[in-house]
Length: 131
Image (cartoon, rainbow, N blue to C red; front, side, top):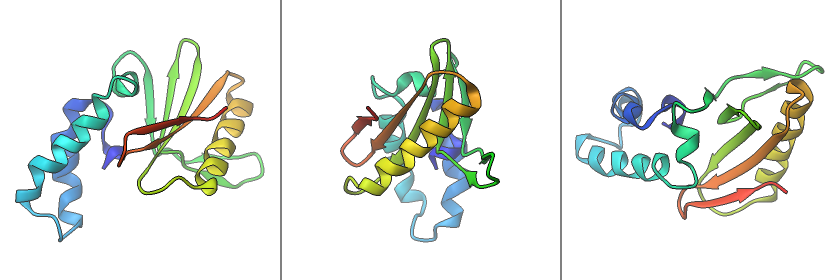
């Protein structure tokens, strides 16, 4: 659902678009899902990634020089460079770290801009910057 959200104001439309695809969710789930999405979008450390102050690209396929595609959850372009963010649920995984590192490294090569990578584990609201 986050792929349909650029700004917090998009939460309602995103839920209306996505919920019909998941029959296990009905209108009684809407308030809790909206609250959870707002918790993510309005988190003090994440808020900038859901604002008009930056350029946001959600789930855009990027074709690498070798022809292979990658699709980061969110790429944010700001005055100091680029941030690439992947949202995850569940436990931390080395696979997640490897994936965001690849995204960061490839985007930095392509853009020529300093690029930072972040994993956001939404269950616990744990933000893991790539070092």
